Image (cartoon, rainbow, N blue to C red; front, side, top):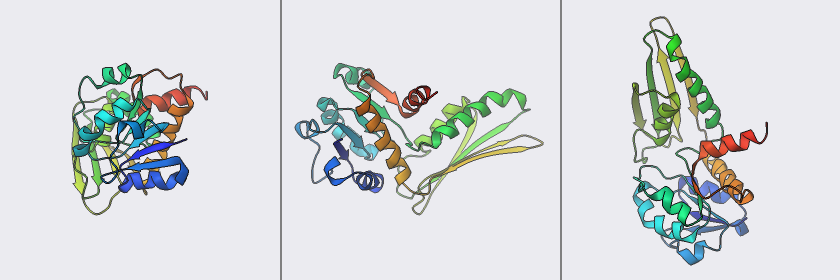
Amino acid sequence: MKIALIGDGKTGGHVKSLLKDNQVVVFNEENKPEVNKLKGADAAIIFVPGSAAGEILEPVLESGIPSVWGTTGYQWPTELPDWIKVKGSRWIMASNFSLGMNIIRKCLQVIGQGRGLMEDPEFHIHEVHHKDKQDAPSGTALKWQEWLGLDDVQMSWNRHGDVKGIHSLHVKTEFESLYLKHEAHDRAVFAQGAVWAANYLIQRPDILPGLYTFESIIDLAFSQTQ
């Protein structure tokens, strides 16, 4: 397995540490990702801020290699899914590559479905991240709302220190409260999931070209183990 790692910052650095030296080629400001260089890899793992995504979008797309994107805070072109299919490539995107977060996803879906059992429930999602995170609310918090399947969810957030990521849900009614929380202790958990996703694409050439969410790939993997 040869991985083109684009972005060797906080999370990208953990990706690098999880791979052997002969398994990864790092691209950054000093070594720009060019199409010919990327084509030498089996897959790309990309952890760059939203402000840098536009610059590398075209070379990654033109390379045609399977790609795993952990970028948030970027307005992706609406034509992107079609472009990926035309290039015959397969991309996975996620705001959070924690494998454990997919257990949380199942819990949130059940909670959302159970809304009708509660009288006048209030839903509040709160997230905390490091002071340098640019987007707010986080992409993961927005995913939590999506997984709940509800529109009227309060959102709040804090930015301080080097917090890796804390997400919590508080459901409150007149007589009780329900809490759900996920906390990442180390950014390596996101790197681990991204490496798993890239390896899965490499091992599954039968997956059709297109743009996939991380959770859809997890569900596919789960379905094959049942």
